[in-house]
Length: 353
Picture (tube, rainbow, N blue to C red):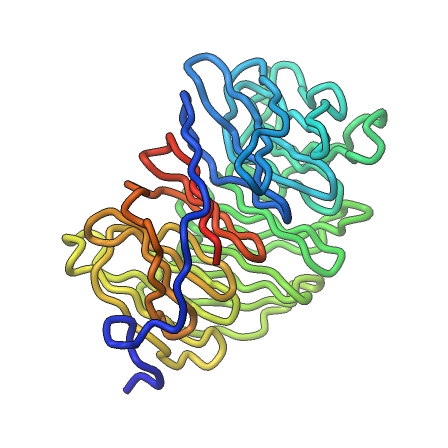
């Protein structure tokens, strides 16, 4: 029996509302970067992309046109925004005014692999071998000392794809799936950039990565495994045997989507305490999970409208004017706002929480 009422029966405890909505002549393919006073978005056009900073009122503060199109999500560290671009370039901009921090990080004859990490003032980018077939490697640039050449390290993920980056306790974490589809996780010292440890999860893939307080939670396709981020010591294994291909950790909650191949009315969300495995809430009927923060989760309901659910019990929170947001695809969270990409990537809506 669930300890608290499911979202379909609980009385709403509060109501949130749509503050403003912006429309774009291009497409937002990556999630916004939330700020304390607005957000940064990357707008893709046919042959180029633009990075734009938007303030709390929805006004564009600055915009910077990229030479070519962005090839992955933008990332932020300290006062910088970092964007991977098609080919082999990484562009870093000052968050305050959009000025380039340095010449684009580009290594001739190489191909950028996956996204980029922006962690503790560093840009971490993975490159394939050069035209001569060299080994994959990492290039790490210090944004606070842009005149210094990037440091190079052997890529501990080698040929893994769809890189995820996290940082905690002076440690940079990289994770992906190798050519066999198995999860690979590696940790670097954030100062020396030396490899601290590496782990390969036999027989399962990578679903989600969460790091905080020196601990690393890795959601694999059939279990959740925790590591000490610094030493790589495996601590606990939970939810063993569960189907976790569509799952994520949000704060202290593991949210699992079931029935992903079925019609929206048959898909279900289950929320569990991430440590005790106790079932804390359930919700039936959704198109997809849009995103989550530590306290809330946003889904697209059966009518493809945004629906806000409180964690850990998945209580529904009404959104005033939510019918103005169609086909939400991504969301980013600040302390008091959710920035929702809707209309198949052509709008950005600010929801006051």
